[in-house]
Image (tube, rainbow, N blue to C red; front, side, top):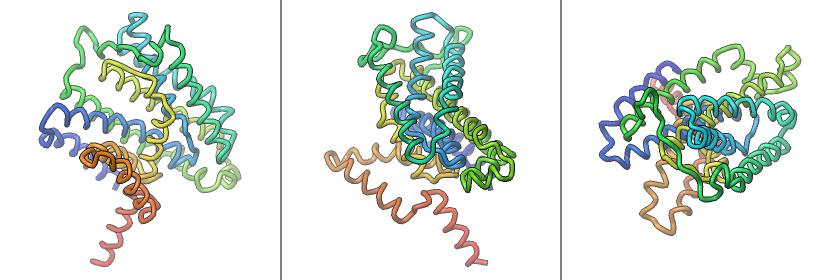
Length: 311
């Protein structure tokens, strides 16, 4: 089923340009891909490892600002600045994750929230480095004198990265490490009783999810050509967690679908003007009431039940 799902995702990425009528549609598709890239990693942490994070926008912002600062202020080649920013965020996640992931439940949520708030405040106040609340310009992503420019080129780059990230996530989930993560989600005590190193596996999931968030942040900065502290704000973290929960936790394709739906939905609700957020909240509320497991797992269960009745 996962192989078929990956094939469907690849076909959607390949065929979608046929239905994109203009530059704006490409921009929205790229934004969907970047959000989905973050959610694939966040789903590994929340859906499989069972560890909540309310500060992932901080990693997103660090990836964006890290690459922007190295490229714009120090003249680093943009591929190198992006790689260095992702590696730096992964190292930071490894360092702070060791004490933070010893916490559980709402204590862990508060700790990750505090981490995200610290990052957001530092980015907004260190104006000599980051530009402060006004943000800063970011050079285009370029290698060997050739810049990645234009919505079409960015669409294919982000689409390829998304398919690759989903493939890697599935390989991880099907590996012994992935089975260990699922065991931790079921019962951490039981997992430790059979010899699973819970601290190491939780930390690995935390680092991977942070690195993917930083990669998406850096790509977003280079694509937009500008970055502001809003990328590291608390509300952005909530948006990312909502996408994962809405699509379905412990479902990689659910993370992708959740990112797509919740990125596209506000575009369709703009015609409602002042009622836009009311309808948006109602959609989220009713989805969670009638589909508590999330959109994709619920639809998969309904489809399986329909197939059994047909047989």
